[in-house]
Image 1 (cartoon, rainbow, N blue to C red):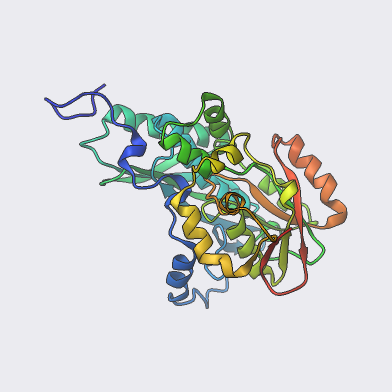
Image 2 (cartoon, rainbow, N blue to C red; image 1 turned 30 degrees about the vertical axis):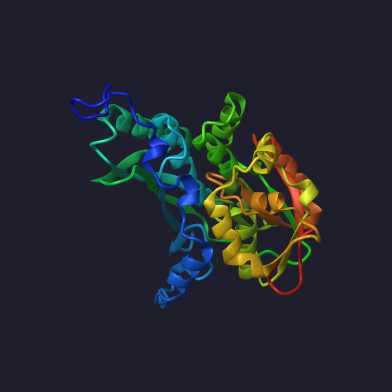
Length: 355
């Protein structure tokens, strides 16, 4: 296979070398996005639009009738790995997660593709698409169409449509004081991606990286069917702190995170201490640090980990405390071995406190 023009070196270039950022680390900083969306006119008065842009939720929700809601989202980014099949799998898993996080089941997807066709040959583009299709097949949905362009950097993702009952919609708003917080996946994906880009990620860590980023958050609609589950969001580009803060703002409450309970990818802390931190981690912290309380003497490494952008991260779940152990057991049994109870919701000014 040749990706270079005739007469040039035929060795394929690394996909990650063609992008200025990768995965959910490509997102605009939270403060920038909030400013842009805040300047947009409200989507009301559409009575059937149950969820729009008002709380920065994971997807839009439109109520069709008294029994059915349509849940719609789109998500795409630049390569976080070099293997085209893995890139397609990660991007598709990440996009479908937004539907699961709202409590819905996906029904179909549309592909979004932008490729520098003079740098990435058709065989590798085909593998990206195959990776996305493989994940959609695992989710039980078709890729029913899409759109492609010739772009400067490689881009792939999906627009995903799902359905659920109105009573099963779960937002990033709705957490109650007294609720317990559960996180379904380990943290540190951004740290791993930074190490990978500099060719310092071990084979074992890469396998762990692929394992977590291609694990579908299909437990979302199962959780949403439980009345004891009050709020759900997925943890992606804004890091654990950023998405916890969105839940705090939307719920009008304070979230307290127990740093000792947080699950980490096996090499995340060591790599962070070695300096493998993404630029998005710095942007994230600059955007929301005024609303975060860190413990006294908090090391800079821990701050980077807490703000680390997660590509295809886990679900952050707020649920009734008396049901938390049973709900956590159900998540573990559903195939999420890193799931942990990580904190609680308290009455108070919306902010996040790390204890």
